[in-house]
Image 1 (cartoon, rainbow, N blue to C red):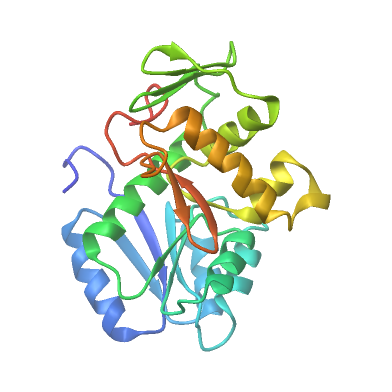
Image 2: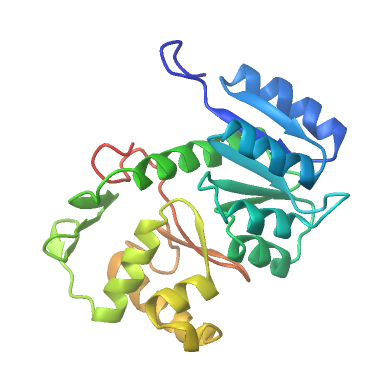
Length: 244
């Protein structure tokens, strides 16, 4: 529950399933959020322009248009974090939503505590977008000083190649949210490498060997099977100064 002194964040829920809307309406209000609802993509786009919500929860299977198209249209002007809620379990649907501009996804059925955790990450990420880049990033044993390009694990310096460092900074920039294979490949290697997923896996293995306490059981760099990677920041020790 949020403190009474903190303005309650406004969430736009674009979801045609009435039972789920009722559940989230009551549960999110009890957790300290305000909610506006739309049962169609068109109504959701209209409400997004009227209210400018802090977070958008978006179903992919809407009656009037595909949720991927809604995400694409929202991203033409709206910077609010988008979390996809969908019963579709196929990885290509998740990837399509993320590539269209969504920040994260949850597959139905999901637990409410998990949704709350994703909302907290989305709010922190949105707040960080409006601040200048912080001087360093810390997550458990990992510490990165961006000004000096210095990377440490448990206080000891770790040497990264230029590609490894760029890959790490892309994951940190989206810390807490999923980054698709395509997004990472295009950001680090360029548009011509958007489909070189085996190449990306090799470099992720390098990062884990250098930066994870136990590379065989990664805690910081999590794989989202068939989709991409997530730098996990749910631990209270993770984040840039002032971001947690």
